[in-house]
Image (cartoon, rainbow, N blue to C red; front, side, top):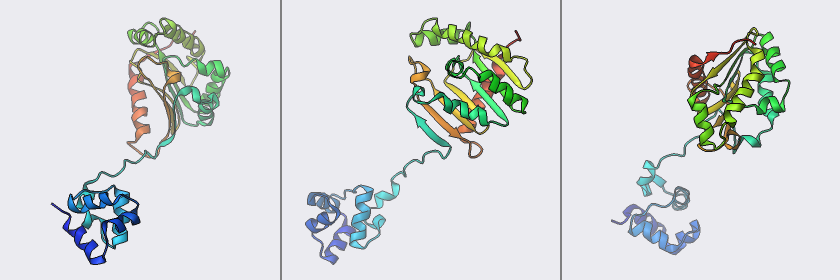
Length: 247
């Protein structure tokens, strides 16, 4: 069935297929298909053609009303990094340095933080002494999920040893007022580094070390957003975790 509305508008204005095609920069055969085969052009092209003809675009091509609008990018997304290795460690350190209420860390090991910033424990103690609640959850090296992750990443016992090293780094903080350190045995889908209303979320990709996986930087803008989703995830893992004793 032809597009009678479009055909009538073109006839009334004296528009040929070639003339309209030249105006909107398409092939004349495309315009012929719009009229005779009732084809719907791309939205941008349809808008330009309708403006040229002085008509409502939806009157000429009703199907455009059913077109899905483009999905909006979350307003909480500050930045997206292709891999964690692209991010300077200073970006991870800036957040806890500025934190005033809460610092949460959920990882298997993340020893890169202590390796690149030896004063990390001092920083966390300083923030805790100023009233900031600090929670650190690291992987239990003896858990099946940690050991399975080592197999998946072809890292063998490396991930277990790094979990033990992380425990050595954080154990001196156990018992410090305002700081809690726990080990967890969950399947870690994302590493989370939170400071107040900001968070770095390092996704985990099967068979790949975390430093090669994407990271999104989030800033909370309201209830129920992406930030709250990951914050709730941290809380759920924290409830299953085991407190680390002093020593």
